[in-house]
Length: 250
Ligand code: PGA
Image 1 (cartoon, rainbow, N blue to C red):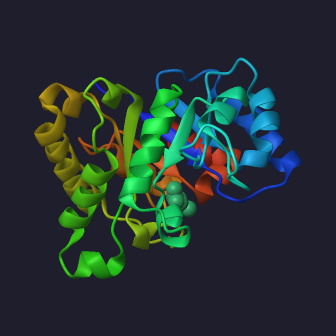
Image 2: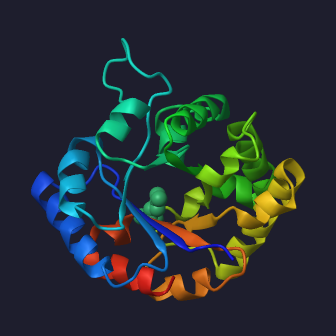
């Protein structure tokens, strides 16, 4: 039985005060629900204060990317050890905005995954196709290529520290959510690939989140699908009440 995992990706949003207050409200609201895993991922600059606001809460603190190197001359970057130092236990890697806007390749994402695991961070690995790729029938191949490339040389043991997030790019921030059937189909495909690469028990234990315009009114049906084990939530995670409503459907 896979434990539902809901994560909020705050992207490059909020002020320090808003982020800290949102973290505190979520920690407060979550104190009664501990049967699912919850993480929030503020921007780097607010990790410290949001981490403090979370206090002893079971809500995990996550980052939105990292640099694969531990330290050195990488202006503007942040490393795995730094994220750990700031109290993070989760990191989102390979988000489509990183892949598209910052030219992250599967190879680079793979290096980041390995670095994150070395430092004990739990990885949310994102994969997903564009609208054009979907319309030309390439979804399975694109998602499969990203998955296999980003997980190259990852061991079956390490898979215990990885969650996959299927995020169709055409559904991110657009209000166009994948239907539960469309999402379930790709999630089942991803689980099939995990069976091929890591064996059945790893594949059955790995959580696959759906992401892309998840809102309180569509979360229930998405999360009811057999291969959808959680959600990676962008816009709707910026409001405590809407994030909590999604969590209550988990
Ligand atoms: P959205 O973003 O929920 O705003 O569509 C999801 C994501 O990019 O992780």
